[in-house]
Length: 561
Image 1 (cartoon, rainbow, N blue to C red):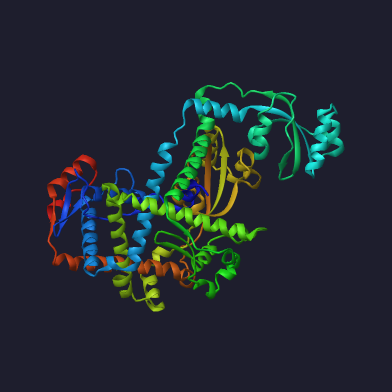
Image 2: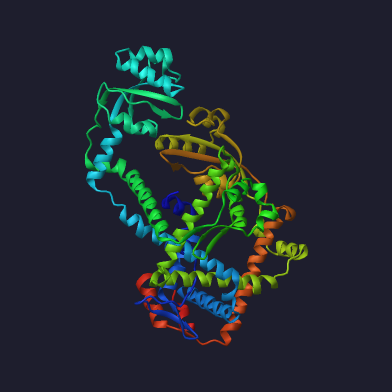
């Protein structure tokens, strides 16, 4: 398995871009917006919090944002994180394991970039050569038979002058038999890998040696070759750069793995009998006997693959991929894959990328994200009491949140000419019947039904939603335009205000109830912590940021701090 595949299947990229945390880990040049017990809340922390808000809360352009709200939120998070450290939650095994997993993933990403991506450059000459090879076309005639001996006999007859087309009709077992083996013009990639080099290395009129393929034994004749069509370098680049780069990355990945294997101290502890004994089914892998089996299979340094760990891996593999005619080979393949993964992991961790400024900051962000999450699980959530009575009371107090979607009964006229649409609107205002005009003037599929769209919920109205919701029953809209068409709608009926049944949406209510209680408890806890903390706010710098980057942000609260 190539390093490219290992990385593609194993890594999670950019996880921390989704985290809003305040770390106190300063990158040179960043100024603090506040200090909590001497630990800075930085400009970078504030900017990241604003980015998260814009990504997750759909802030409208020009909407006023209070910058101090974000600063206070970051201060609260800093206080909670400090409390988590005082509780020694950073030593919790869950936190430690998650941190190690993240450090490993991000280290592997950086290793891959250094060892493969940065080295897999593609030159103009390579692109042109690859294009010419892949787009060269060859007119091929072939014969496929079941045995090597028969193939050799037929090839000898062709060499002696016999007609290959006639021999194909008589002996070939593939789908091109009735065409005399004629497959027309093919590109290199359209042939089986075992036949590509042999076929495309020949000249017009030559035949290949006997080739073993998955469908039998083949003889291929080159009838005619055509060079790749002439293209500019830029056109070639658009076609071949990505696949060629991918090919080079996979080749480099294999080279890297070979180098790691040579350098590593790999001890194969497994016997043929033990490999034969290993299970290859998910049911067997779940058996407690296998799960607890500590017999070593292979060792790389301090890393050991035991029988139990081997079985654990099977649980993550689709059962269809465990079906094989050669179970011994498949087990060895799984063992080799484990060796490759561990070699990559060891090499990545030995580079100590976490000592770099950027990676160090990311690790700190992630650790604090984990601490806040664990703090919530251990301190906040246990204080939230949930019962049917409490949920029903919450539902009754917030019923307007649980309104059923409003439904409208509408008719619609659609035309492609604005002047015609306005003429129709004048006719409607003059008393013309909407259904009659829709049937005779509308250009959409509803015309035959007098424009009747039936009952439709507000969320399904798309661009018509705002106009329809503003109408009273019996009213017509103005001319509305969208996508080059013009619309007039009539509101015929509107559903009454109604509420979702509590029992049907209890899960939604519980989620809202827990979220609201969580936010209150979190804020209250942070407020108590603030009473014993030394908090300083860099008002002049916040004002500077407000004027420099966020002209619409309110700064009125700055004077209140």
